Image (cartoon, rainbow, N blue to C red):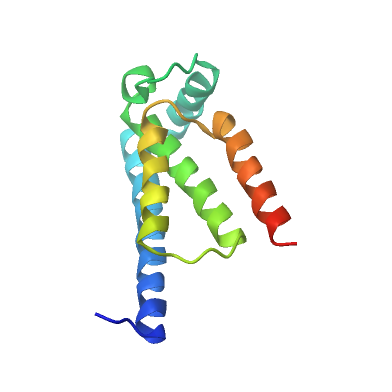
Length: 128
């Protein structure tokens, strides 16, 4: 099936909406499962813990904190994609949710920043 430009824009809007809805749902679930104080101390535990290849954040800090970490990671990745003005396709959606999976098992906002900033630097340099 050949897609026209109008269908592509509609699909991109739907993917953006799905991403924002997922982030909102993660934050809502995290605040249902944990208090803000628990989220603060849990994120401190996650950030200061030794990040082995697989670190189960559910066992380390609790369900609410793990979902909160996932929401933060998804927000950072989505902001980066929006800043770079990348098109929202199925491949972009897959990349976003791969990061969500990694956010539940071993990735936190501190240890993903070098990789994301390197990608941002590469993208800005190649557009020059």
